[in-house]
Image 1: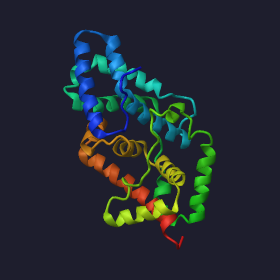
Image 2: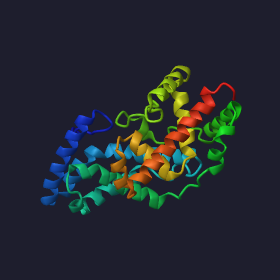
Image 3: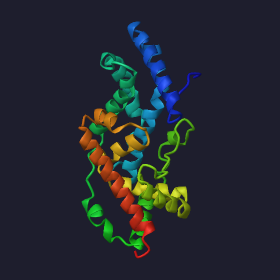
Image 4: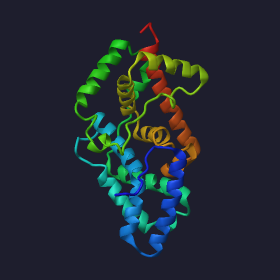
Length: 258
């Protein structure tokens, strides 16, 4: 297909394409041209597809979901029907992306069993020694053996790999110095594996909010609309996710006394 398909590239390009797609979708809907409507919508589906793939991948790694039980297409295919049938609810181009993520979140939540919150892990995070962290990671990697690439779509160039640069975890100037130390002492694969492990211990709402913020670039206000939550609830989840990730890195890699 020759049409441009957008992902997490230049934000200006994304906004331009979203406006263009919204205009074309409105015209095709008015003409009741479902076939071309779906073809046009396909241009902006890859971003949602990757979000779904990440949620499924972490659920498998956490042992909450059997490998192969779901495919991202099981959820994104339904979006073509949802958008077409509910077009009147999408008032402008700014509503289009949040609508897509909101609908796919609803589909995921209806299909996935709610995960248990691992209170023991978080309550005792200060007490873990470096050997205990390593043992936890070894078990995590063993349990998820082969599942880090369980979704072939994630290896396609249309779906960029997660970029764990720590910028969304260490946000203050003082914290950025710590992030630089981590970047110098750990390779990218090790950073990603640690983040995946900690994310798998978070509750599903906290993890999905963090994904929407970090990977998809939504603001707290936009996430609140997607999640049908208050702004304070979203910011609380984001702050807690950052705190847990930051503390896990500090306790495991930056404190020599462990």
